[in-house]
Structure formats: structure tokens, C-alpha cells
Image 1: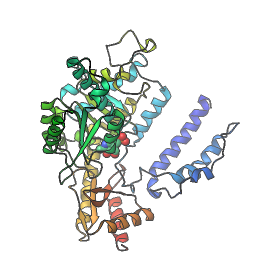
Image 2 (image 1 turned 90 degrees about the vertical axis):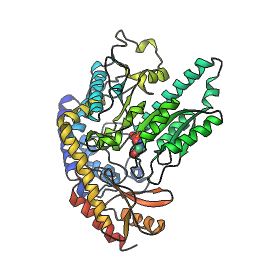
Image 3 (image 1 turned 45 degrees about the vertical axis):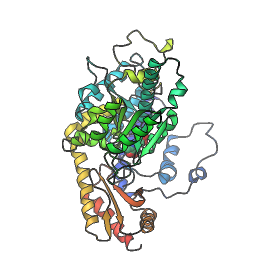
Image 4 (image 1 turned 30 degrees about the vertical axis):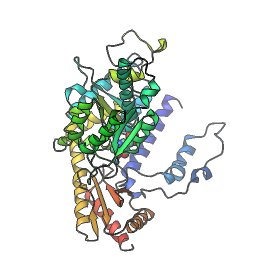
Length: 472
Ligand code: PLP
């Protein structure tokens, strides 16, 4: 494919994408295929000679779309949203075209420098304390990583190295392995499974502590666990608090957890993967109060800020602590301007990194802060409308406070009844939702996901749920 052909086919692809996204509400949100379906539809070997573009495009609907779950359908209400917007797609197209691997400033200065700028923009949009931003004074700043899971692991490893160095400072003969066997980190039973994975990969002990009746991780639970662990000779070093838990969108009490971490010298990491985007709205920003106690803060603009996957933004107060964990410096990666700007390869595990800041820059510029705020507020209001519909039907109850664009609800009665309802809904396929459990209670989660969701889609979904409830 030469540039002229690309120009033509590219326009055809843009047309296909625009048609796909503007008529997506006509499609069944949940794919209706069995495992292995695609193997039946494609050849066993890659073609020896090139296929034609026309033949390839002919296969998109019957092979790819047949088995695609349409996350951007306004009838998709599962999990949490994942961002998608035309500005985001266009920014990513340009990033793909440039195709640089921006591991150091020298490997592509614009890749590093734009990231520094947009991370400060976004940090200011959520009113982070200045220590988290790039400035001439401190060592704070932001970096874009792929996922919240990767970020949690990154911060846990940064904290682990900090503690190993600290302990070795007092006792240089201590082996790293012996120190690691004493390190212990904490999260609540509502934290995302990625925290458990970070503990596994980081080879440290993890205490999963009981949340309160609202699903919030409270200071008293942390205090007790730290006391017990210290009495047993262990070293508490890392706490992961969640703002907007995956199950029911609970908020951990960082104003209680923070001072404990500060007193104990523990690294507090805040995972606000979903809810973090809402902090750009003044009415939701108080939910982030207490962030000043954290060493690191993360959210995913690729969830609720119109940016296409992947774009997970992490701010740290002291980037040197990440560099100490990750620095390896072969000669072929060095350059003569080191130190003037971040060399982002020291801020995370992979060497290679995409030009992700482009799509974030496109989104921030082409939407502007006000439109992004309006879109978050619209989604929360739609969730509140759904909540009203649920509450008006005496067969149902709402199981958690609706703070963001997620409603957790259930039929009054047994878990089995609710499992049956969920199966009916997803087998029916007109809408898609997923369940969760808290303290033994099974419930259904209704999230406002696609940015195109309107009140009509919410009413449609509720009508489907009511109709199927009559069958339970
Ligand atoms: N943390 C929370 C609170 C989440 O809700 C999720 C996913 O929904 C994650 C972490 C994991 O996100 P990622 O896919 O970016 O790793």
C-alpha cells in the first residue's frame, strides 16, 4: 500500500468508522457467538500472496463484528465505561503514523515534552496539590502508562525499593530477600484485583482488610492491621486506597488513611481508575480531598474522559523514587541532554512507549474543559434518573449510594432470584450489564457507559429489565 492508496483506503476506513459509531445503537451490544467461532470463518494459514483490500473489508462484518461486544453502544451498561471519541481516535491515528518509541527525551523530544505539558494540564484540572506537578522546584510530575494495573504495580515496586534502601541504610548486611519477606501492604476487600496481582508480582505480603458497610476502607481497620503486623516484626510499606471501587463505586476514606500512612512513613497510592475523571468537576472534587497525603495518584482518562484506550495517568510527588526502582542505563540509551527533561523509561517497567499524550492533547483541546465536565455531569444525572426508576418499583432496592454514573440494584429477595434476572437480561441481549457481590449479597450493576447515552436509552433499559423481571 503506497501513500496514494493509503489516502483512498484511509478515507474509506474513516467512513466505515463513522458509520459504525453513528449507528451502533442498532446492534446487539453483546456478541452472540460460541468460543472458537472465528476459527471456523478464517483460513488456517496467513495468505502467501496479498489479499485485496475489498476482500479484507468484506470480512469485517461477518467475521469481526459478528463476535464484537459493542462497548460504545448506548445499550452497553456493563463494567465501567471505556473512552471513545473522534478527537481521541484522530490523535491515536497520528501517534500510529509517527510511530516513535519515546523512551527518552532524545528518542523523540515532542513525545516527552507534550506528555509533560498535558500531565500538568490534567493535574491542574483535578486540582492536584502542586507537589504532584512538574515544576522547577520539586521532583513531582506525571506520566502516562497503559493501565491502572500497571500503575499500581509500578508504585508498589517504587515503594518496595524505597523501603529496601531505607532498611539497608540502617543494616547494610541485610539481604534484599530477607527485607522483602517482612514487607507488608494493605488494601480493602473492595480494591480491584490488580492490587492483589501487584502484591503477587512484587512478592510481598498483602493484607486485604474488611471495608465498612458502605464498602469504604477506614482508618480503624488499617490501624489495627498495622499494629498487629508491627508486633510480629513485619514492615508496613504500602497502602492502596480506591476512590470509586469497581464493585459498587465506594470511596475509601483517604482523610483517615492518609494521616496513618504519613505517621508510619507508608507510601499511600490512590487508585481512582474510573471516578478520577469526575474530579475535573468542582462538585465532585471534594471526593479527592486527602490526596495531599498520597505519594501517588492515578486515574484512567481512557475510562471516563473521552480518551481511547490506553491512557492511564499517574502523578507522583517524587519521581526519583520510581527511577531508583527502574533505572538501568546501557550506553545505547544515553543522550547528552539527560536531566533537563524526564526520561520516561525510568518511570515504569517497559522501555518502549507510545505517543499517548497526543490523543489526550487532542481530546483536551477539541472538547475543552467545560464540555468534558458537562459530559461527566450528564452521565451522573442519567444514573440518578435510573435510580429513580428503580426506586419507583417496589420489587427492587438500590444497594449503594449513587455518587457517580453507576447504580447498584437488586430484586428484594435471594441471590438466586437476582442471578436468574441477570441471565435473562444478558440472554435477551437488548442491553448488557454485569453483577457484583458485597458481603455476600449479589446485585446488578447498571453503568452509564457510552458518551452517547441519553435518557431514552436509560428508559429503554429499565423497560427491558422490568419486562424480564416479570419472568423471574
Ligand atoms: N482499579 C479500579 C478501581 C478499576 O475499576 C479498574 C478497572 O475497572 C482497575 C483498577 C483496572 O484498570 P486497568 O484495566 O486500567 O488496569
